[in-house]
Amino acid sequence: MVRYLITFSYDGSGFNGYQRQPKLRTVQGELEKALKKLNDDKKVEVHASGRTDKGVHAINQKAHIDLDITINEDKLKMALNSLLPEDIYIKSAEIVSDTFHGRYNVKAKEYMYLINTGEYNPLERNYVYQYNKSLDIVEMERALKYLEGEHDFRSFVCTQDEKENCVRTITQTNLIRDLKDPNKITILFLGTGFLRYMIRNMIGTLIKIGEGKMKAEDIIPLIDKKDREAAAPTAAAEGLYLRNVFY
Amino acid sequence: MVRYLITFSYDGSGFNGYQRQPKLRTVQGELEKALKKLNDDKKVEVHASGRTDKGVHAINQKAHIDLDITINEDKLKMALNSLLPEDIYIKSAEIVSDTFHGRYNVKAKEYMYLINTGEYNPLERNYVYQYNKSLDIVEMERALKYLEGEHDFRSFVCTQDEKENCVRTITQTNLIRDLKDPNKITILFLGTGFLRYMIRNMIGTLIKIGEGKMKAEDIIPLIDKKDREAAAPTAAAEGLYLRNVFY
Image (cartoon, rainbow over all chains, first blue to last red; front, side, top):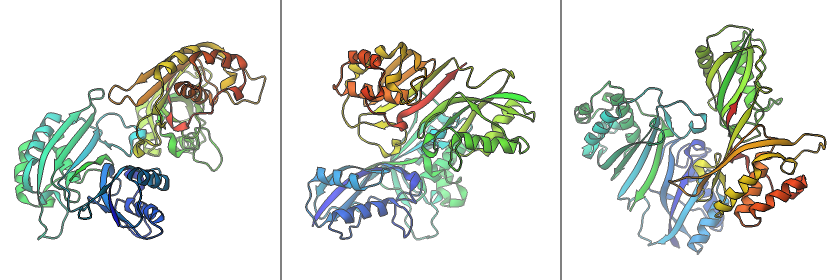
């Protein structure tokens, strides 16, 4: 048995999310189908850094896999790409120690969220969140700083489970306005881990702040409330990208 | 009857080309379906500047339409966008004279072709031509200049009809390397008119030149041959965009 770490990108538009589900087209499902063919028809489980939801993209998702066959790293990359559909691409494969784990060893993750406040572009409809009004970028940037640090992010999570630990650390945030097209806004989050819908819920609140319906400082009592009902609606999936995973 | 000029963009990936065809999803078919609903259920014919082939995109395609109803230009834009699918978008509508014609009045067209010589990106697979080797950009740029001017472009056209007039004028060409990502190459063509597959056939030849299999000067005897068999294969549709139409 040889353990490999694979780095891959995918277009989330054609998948029912990352995680394997019976009868639905998922990223994990397609990967495991291709890997089984390579692995002498024996099932291979893909242990990714975490799930991404339906419509969410990945630029550098990572996962570990165990193969019964021995195959050179570059050959594994090429063989997998020849078996995979066009909307998943293996960027690299490397042999790792048998104790390495694709999910448990994650130290940090980086997510990117794209917003277009300019004219709708049908060519980008699956790759950016279309927002048809202008946004107060300065206020949004200020609000981002209140999200940084260690917090209980329960207000941004849709969990029913009161015992679930929602404490996470956001180590860095960034808001970038495209120089060529100021209507394109990129928001970056680097953190130790993110809960389900957490980023899209934070983006929903940031948009409310950009609209002037909330002040940047309102983030503080909102976090303190620890109540999902208090925050804004979840922002659309198509703007979200898992950009990097760090071990 | 009021005549309107509409400007629209579309993502070619989901269409069997621009032109209406029975039982197939086409840009013209979707536009005419939406227009019929607006026009008291009376058929409306869309007279575009020209067709685009399957998989080819448009940033600014233009067409004239005649409506029996009277509707304000902005309202027409909004009403159409609410009826159209997500992959077509009306950018503007303006009332024009009854003698204006969407196709016959075209003075010039601009096309753009995108090539990626870097790593494959599944998120861009429908929007750029993926070429996995490096290209000699300087030689390609030199070759482009031989295509400029008035020529009989028969060598770049797949016509069987010997009598068809293949004389066109390319007024300007441009090759741009992306500053942020030098693996992204944009080639622009401005001309009085282009024949079917002409740009994709010219791109096929330019790639051969970029590969070092032909010299820039070889364009001259190639044009003189007036024989499609002499030129390189047609380049992929997904890299091609109709960028503008001038009247």
